[in-house]
Length: 195
Image (tube, rainbow, N blue to C red; front, side, top):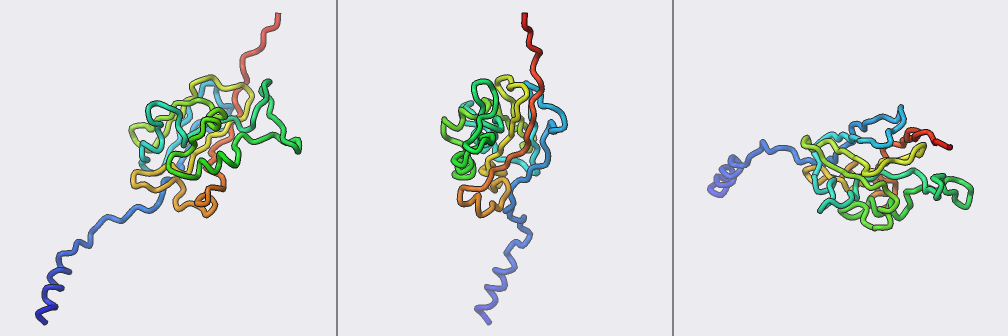
């Protein structure tokens, strides 16, 4: 009986009103502008999430290019701006399997310079609400071209959970598609003046 009294006293001191542990990653809530209208050639794209994000997984260190939030053409383009064709005569995706593996692995998202050459150089900022990402290309987009916004699955919330947590088995193995948000058609460019 003497041994039981200290255990009862210890149990009375345990706090049972602890907050729940966050094990769920952020979800995508919305993306603006919508794909219903052509994307302006100098767009600002707002990506809204369900909860605050870890700033270091969104904004690049020392002002470099973000490796987790990307804007790129949907297809590889030739010098004339037309989609390059693969051996089957189909447009060749700009998002290679190696890029997909890199976007899903590690803690930094895209990290190879050759991959960044396929992306539109952009300023990526996590706004003060910590739930909205602003993606702003640093150059005008090519007219009449399809663009995609891609999010790496290594984007994390404030508690450290990955975007889309828990990840799919394919993402855990470094394969499977990252989060391709939108396919946009850019607006027509200015008319050509011949003369």
